[in-house]
Length: 135
Image 1 (cartoon, one colour):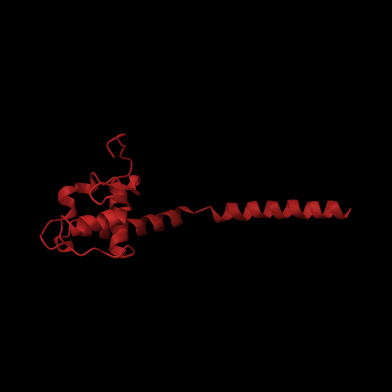
Image 2 (tube, helix red, strand yellow; image 1 turned 90 degrees about the horizontal axis):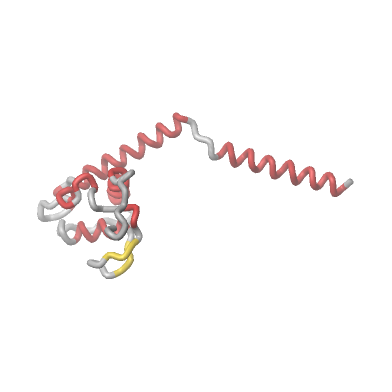
């Protein structure tokens, strides 16, 4: 009898765990709309940084080489970058571009503007197909 009760309690607990997990993963349309609005606000900050001549010291902006985030391929990071000589992350590549073509001061990797630039690049590159061997 004791084994039956323990088994029933275990089955009930496992069943409740699945219910709690399912509830935790359910989001309302309102939730998704709020999060999308917040994300797009961060994307707008990233877009502004991408076209800001004050990010560097020579008037060059990210968008001159990468209009609309073109040829950035954020989905391929981390990866080996020949010009740096090692495997790097997307924020490190952004900082390399700020230091070199833009002749600016690199940002902290957790700087909100750095996060915004990654959000912008990722948003602009969504649904763009990779060409094997090119990226």
